[in-house]
Length: 263
Length: 265
Image (cartoon, rainbow over all chains, first blue to last red):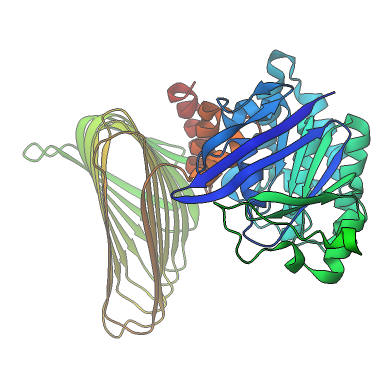
């Protein structure tokens, strides 16, 4: 059992507060969906967990299995078992997928790394995701469509075998068929690895495949409402307006209109 | 594979086809310059390896009409001056891969596109550990000519690199394609310079240039590190990608891989 916990986390970029007193706990086997309007800090949260040095942590803590990870580098956090599937995976020219993944797996496994099993596993996982194996020798995400990039993220997840998976808008840029492949493979991995999942999304359609145990609405850098999957339906029908207090800013406390409870 | 090995002042020709007419003049006693002239009579490939020790060379390559030359050059040793002159005639094409792993060099490359549809594709890779100066001049003397100049260098230790790349398209020389992309990854605090010049006096020209001096993109580093790759390994991967991309010559690829292992163990 593993636990990723954000406790009273406040984060700034320059002079702007992005996360404000953010609290969330994710345990192995749980699926948490994080939803909210654009610019509310969802992607920032995922990058902060991963240790992106662009962001300055003002207060609070992030712990993994009870130990603070704030002083750990990004690669150390990854080797701890945290994986971020990025919203816009970048292309790296000249670095092949094979070299990239081999280096990542070899760094993780050390002397235990074996090339032949790695290749077999890579090919098997590529097949599951319906990725042409020729892509293995292409540059990382170079010339990939949006859908291929997202599948590549899921492939990396399979290969790195994380304990806690953060999915930042993994559904963006996916057609219906690719969405199904990505969604079902993520759930297959979850069942197999019994990992925790944080799913950042704008759309209900992804959550048809990745059924959340908890749904959180994030506005202005903090969670303003938590509930079950019925919250997703409400957002689909009504949007986020009911959760946004026009007077709310990041230095004041958000007042949540608990419309769902009144309905 | 046609090969010329230039070991200081000795020039050795290996397996040279009749498609190459090569003349070597011994060291000029006054200037100390070793003069090599190559006439490329038919489509072929050629590898030139320099082992330098403060030598000076003048290399002239004339590529005849309709001929394609695939050229690769590897330079090793310390200090040296090279002037290379390429004259390309109608519909001739040169694809040129270069790797410099030399301690200090001053180099001039002069390319004359002397016939319509002549095309020059230059792919330079280097690891600079001392002062290096490159002056590249491309003369588009005929219509429909193409030049693609790409310089990628990693600057380390006492490296101090300057690229001056100048392309000329006179008025009336229509439909030329003029590209140059210069990038120096600087791991030192030493000053490096890129001076990209496009002297284009003809509206009917497509010209592009990019110049970048600095480190690797922080987003690339974050992406690699987010997969558990250490900073050192991430740098090695990015350096490999930077230096190995777009090369045709397998011998240069092997040499670059070996050199990367030596510098970044």
